[in-house]
Image (tube, rainbow, N blue to C red):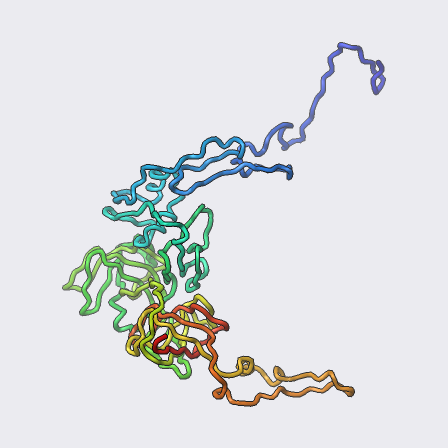
Length: 431
């Protein structure tokens, strides 16, 4: 048989084929995905009805499973010997506890969500009790979170997570149901009362202090500390601007820096020793310390016992406008008869469009007449009537979370329009 090129082929003759591979490329038949988990392997077959997967179950369901839908084998069963609580021993961490009890150390955020008393997940102490199971339906573990993921002072509802991070399956919110947690910025009602002392030094030879530092605090006369007490570290950011028609309470907007646990206290020198168990920012000598609350329960509505009018002062940040689910401060408090749970109605009177003209020129009011036979004409929209003669309209509602003497922390539970400092809020007796 004649072959291409002029040669001949005899039956039974052996032929040899040589394959040349370009430098740097894998040999034919090499699977470049062989080192990857099953769910990360590439595929060009769009017609497949199933794909490989990596299953990371909840903390009660054991370790992760890698495989395919056809050959996954037996999924690890739910752990059956997990106690309700664990008594912390020396050296325990949430990571180790989740690995020991659930064979899944990555489930520590879920266990942290079961234990709101743990302010910092990196610090648990011998003798603490850590809850490992919650036997309630998941739908009852909704929450309101004021967290870092939406910016300090931004409020998220429902099943969101603080921090906005990802990667954890079935991650739960880090605070209990119906709770607002101020992480970055807060408000003190009376600086003379809420400032207990000052951070004056540290054991570490450094200017900027962070979590784990041993620090010294000096307290003002009349303040006594107890071992294990938690103090908030903060510094003043600003005094709220004056609002037309509002009372100006003696309060300040503050920035949270961290939390100190008191380990030693000398009432004679009024100097205490403690450890920074949480740092939200660099802590420095001169920062103030006190019992400033960062956590508020969203209390159920409570009947108003007084008729009063209040003004919106400000928010945590110097925003021009506020919206639903944000924190707002008003200029009325417990001295005026307000208590947590009271509801105040946001009211406006007048033409809302007319309000927008206060910072514009008459051009914003100009009408263009195009329905005339001659050249185009313009005229200014008339604004008749006084704003105070218009009827009041309810535009939203505030709920009191904490009532200080001369001001209150409120949550904007509903609003139809943006809220501005100076807006009126009224409480009606019996509502």
